[in-house]
Amino acid sequence: MNIISGLRWFGSIDYVEVLAWLLDISLVTFIIYKLIMSLKGTRAWQIIVGLGVYLLLVKVSDMLHLRALNGLLRIFLPLGPVALVILFFPEMRNLLEQFGRLKFFGQGFVLLGREDINNLIDQLTKAVTEMSRVSVGALIVIEREVGLDNIIANGRHLNADVSSDLLRTIFYPGTPLHDGAVIIRGNRIVAAGCTLPLSDNPKLGTMIHTRHKAALGVTEQSDATVLVVSEETGTISISTEGSLERGLTSDQLRAKLTALLQVEESTEGRVQIRRVMHDTMRKIRTGNGNKPEHKKK
Image (cartoon, rainbow, N blue to C red; front, side):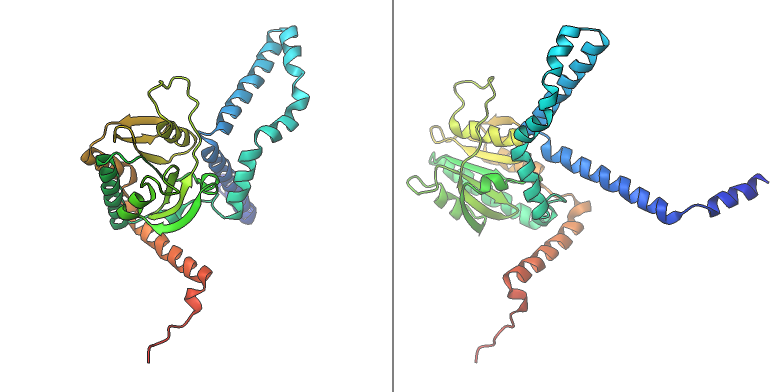
């Protein structure tokens, strides 16, 4: 009898509704995850933590009957919606831009295969080592998962292949772009002469110069990797996740970049597929895919 009842129950299930429910939960989970990853490490994330502490204080003061403190804290609650819009306006605008460019759902098209990454590491190591030898200051930002479009927008767009010669030309003293930062996306220099946000960490000593503060500033707000060459000493530094490692040799720099940028063998096939899709879409956008080749007579 129980088996028959169980079969009747399974037969009464609306599988279309179950699939719709699972899809709904999956989409909400994915969007929340992407929002957290987009805000993590940024000023907005610190604001969210601060709001969490504020709401916790409101609740705790109410439970402990701290009426004066609770009343003071509740004064600001009606201002919450307006304050949120003001505080999160830059982040909201950035998220809408990512939606418009379909970048909210991932930056897979900028992933590179093993051969391209090795070439990128070779060009970066060669350029940085040579600039270090002659004490030419440089600031090179390698974009990773978190987009840097807001920084790219304040620089000069280039969209050129990464090469040691081009990087040394950009940072050569006296050129118009040598004081700013270079932004690398994939294996392309997308912009130069960019202004980076400076770190306001009070623990930084007075010996940290502007280039290094800029490197720390952008890695505090994103997952980018930044290479720095000191103009005063020629010292090579690398910054990731808000930390700075100085005094690297050429071999140490190569090893660091390899560890940070290397593609695992298990994902290399997917990277190749994405690269083919990226090349196809770029041809379609530029119209090259529809233009027939004309043979020379």
